[in-house]
Image (cartoon, rainbow, N blue to C red):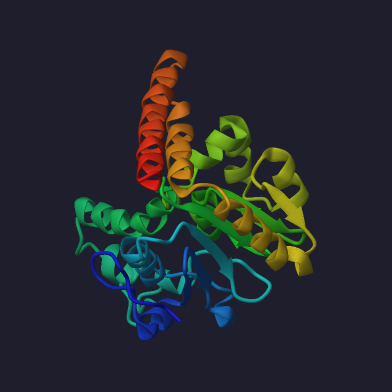
Length: 279
């Protein structure tokens, strides 16, 4: 069950989560999000992504770890192709009837896509460590959702696929940068433009998975990683993630300076804690 948020706004209600095809359980510092549309192979819609954004903006302040998984034996088949029919999906805005019928400008469509991307961008927040637990297929948007997470733990039956170019589209849910950052531009081109399946072992070799385990061991492996992450000081973890995120864009000198600033902040905080404990 979702619990009330300690931050601004409120978490989505159970009814809102159900309409979006999502499940949410928040237990202390750990939030678990489940893609839950098994009748559609956990395919996602615009409402799925805007509700993910809603979750990200209203999580309780003490949440440190977010785990995303799919219900059953598949992570996600990607976008529900019903979104490209004139009637759309469950009353949602159709990509054809509501966007590509000439009634929307390019700026309107770009704004709409930006709103969908918010469902993926918050997973990079430095104060969170996000984990994708992947069983079976993670196709298109499902692959991009996994790429948005800090860590990917795969069952040995997992398969990634960037399907969008084969459908005449481009990956637009923030997945292109992490894919290139991890595998390099040439391998990313090959993966995207062939739309082939990347199995779990190859994903591990390419750096797209931190761990591959038998399918029945996936929940336990995720729990072990979560426990190890929670054992690390929360403020130090957030500061370290922030440093690592900026490292690729910094020169050595810039990164060294960033490390110094971050360490001064940590030493100051630790000194304050020690002084308070000694009173």
